[in-house]
Image (tube, rainbow, N blue to C red; front, side):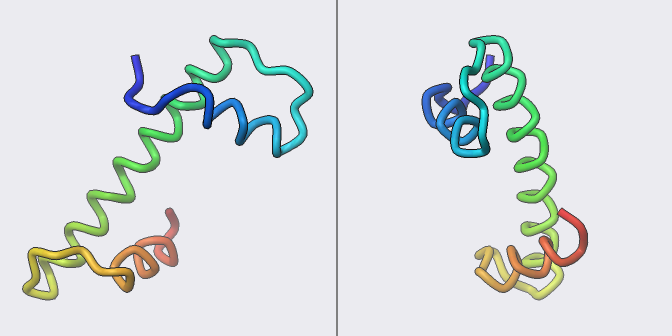
Length: 69
């Protein structure tokens, strides 16, 4: 089970053009999003730590995104 609520995930898929979304598809999509977000969060935390900070800043998120997330 994912931590993300399924309704917003379903809305994202529908905004992307899906006419209908099954519950299992929404659950799987949420799982994939959480996996990607977890990897991105770890990279952001590592960048903040490397800079000698405990706080993740917008610049850390932007840099992590540029690195391929």
